[in-house]
Length: 290
Image: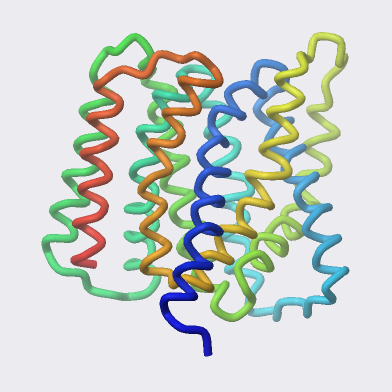
């Protein structure tokens, strides 16, 4: 049996790499929607990632999920394959990636809430207190006019966080039996019959106006955000422990803000950093009372 220290040592770099990969998702999506429609971007990234998942599943000869797993896989597909990518792509047509990343601070809390609702747990009252405080912080930030705000973009981000939290919670429960990367692979394949027609239907009439950065953004969210990131993230959780390595997710908004500023040269206001820091504190404390 591997020692706790060894498991943590192996889990930390894998988990951290997964978080860094996910942190670049919104900046990459922001670039990609400059050349592709939100529907095409969502469907194309899902199709590409599904082909990768199918190849790995076949190469490693993974057993098919049972029939009673299909409902849970459908929820995962709705949350992380369709809902979150589509809603964030739509939101990023109205707001900057730096602005949207503040909402990502609520993702661990959204996951925890759905874990409570789906798992039938009864958290302490302080959990709900800090959950409301974290949500109020994001709501207050959204209402401030920092030059990057948009009611439409903010509402789309809230919906994206809700669906992603549902998908994460359902996937976490299912991965205990199927394995982490296997869950995302099967969820991608389950969505494939829907995503292929959508990709064909929204196929760009011409590729001449698509910039190189937009192609790079599409490639990144397809290969890394939708597939490779999950491999490192779930490997980190498995070897280092879900409770300990899962705390690394709190760093994702800060990595995302740094990438938005460095790569896209978007303005990162102190209000964004302060709101993100307060949300992360609320999430950390709330999870202690879950």
